[in-house]
Length: 135
Image (tube, one colour):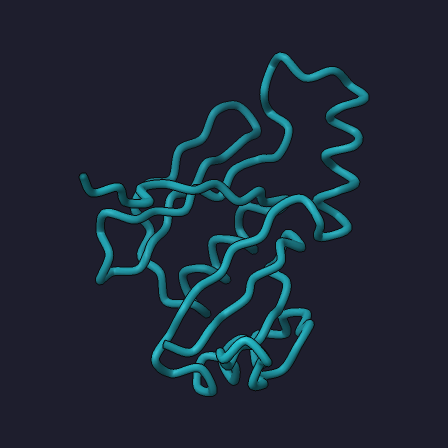
């Protein structure tokens, strides 16, 4: 049996800023851009992995959520503690320079970790924590 990651979701608070970051800085292709009223779901992914996608979505859109739950989710997104993702690359330092040059909030510069990987971390335009490890 084979199980793959097909789609994962990250919240966005500004669809244009998130689209520009994931497309222009990280180089992901845009696969779908769907709007409904004032909301947008933007599907992006690495060109060399057409079977794996990230949906940048408006947070707290589930109609079953209470106003209090929406408020809490909004606070968690703003603090950067609602969602995270880990990428891997064969060009860690080059990607770090692109991310740093974009003005992203750098949480950790590239460094060797005790557990054996080299990585860096930053926040995307919505505040999501993104960690990138060297392949």
